[in-house]
Length: 395
Ligand code: HEC
Ligand code: HEC
Image (cartoon, rainbow, N blue to C red):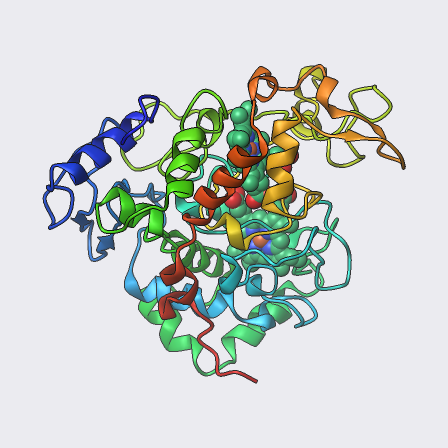
């Protein structure tokens, strides 16, 4: 049964699955203008997209190519790309954890703690803005300058003092010159930081995850247990409210793709903190407020995609909720009341908290059902796909 409140794209795809025309390559166009399951070839690059997935948006200056993606994969996994040679992108973005790192907050190459948790990279090409809350980071190319060059907190630790040296490490590694030549034909000299960034961005755009049990269910290729079905209906319904903020094909509300006309970039306060009743969140993690300085933006963050969420614990921007069960308890309570310690305060009464969170009404069985449903979003092909794995031999 399909719940009434399902998002239009789900209805389109599910209806197609029910009438038996969703698989087999027949094209079904949903309301977002996507062509599920289609193969789309701009230039010399072929997207192989799961059913229901739109063609990703690619910046004009950085067209996709197989050679660029290949180079980007090597660079993503190469520790020589950090100042002290200790970290690659993959040090904080592990494939087996859907490209998160299992830590509450990330730790950079010099040991400095990041205020926030490393994020998963599944379907990152479709995120309208990047990171937990920065509204100005709208391309992967721009976002990458943060982990590479940021000085506070230090992540990869590339700075003006070592930039040239790091690049020469790459240039003198024999495997790279032919790869740069293939990825950037006719561009000399190579490599440049611009090329490094473009190649890694192209690789990240291929990190597409759309073969979970849920995807197979929507295509009529898998069956849900009664608990998973109840969880799906709750998730997409007005008792749990989840779909309002996690209702897109990517289970968030922050989607951009090649044919997007209107791109929405909402941020929300879910009631995690309200230190001393002042509305404050922990220092350095005040959400959108850090960028706008508006009181109404205090504690607002981007809703995370819930694809592969079973693998991305601990949860929330600061990793402050340990398990999916605890996330559901948090939502069912309408926010978090911290009774002792430096962050004590009642997040449930935060003035900026989304009204939707207050409406969530779930008993223990319903919470367990939603957790069962969330686990259907795990895509085992994605976390084992050799195209996304470390290309360097194990050391
Ligand atoms: C020290 C650990 C660390 C390293 C190394 C690191 N990242 Fe991250 N990554 C993070 C953290 C933490 C966030 C969340 C940042 C925030 O919200 O401010 C993040 C966020 C991201 C995002 C945004 C994802 C989204 O959903 O919006 C992308 C993309 C990304 N990283 C790519 C990379 C790439 C590419 C590299 C290598 C050049 C890299 N990261 C290196 C920790 C790391
Ligand atoms: C008002 C919008 C909104 C609603 C409704 C909502 N969420 Fe969220 N969700 C968010 C935001 C925003 C975050 C990130 C919050 C943060 O880190 O501060 C989030 C984070 C999460 C996370 C953690 C993801 C991660 O990788 O850390 C899970 C799991 C989650 N939500 C599940 C749900 C479920 C299940 C429901 C329904 C019971 C729900 N959400 C309802 C906005 C919402």
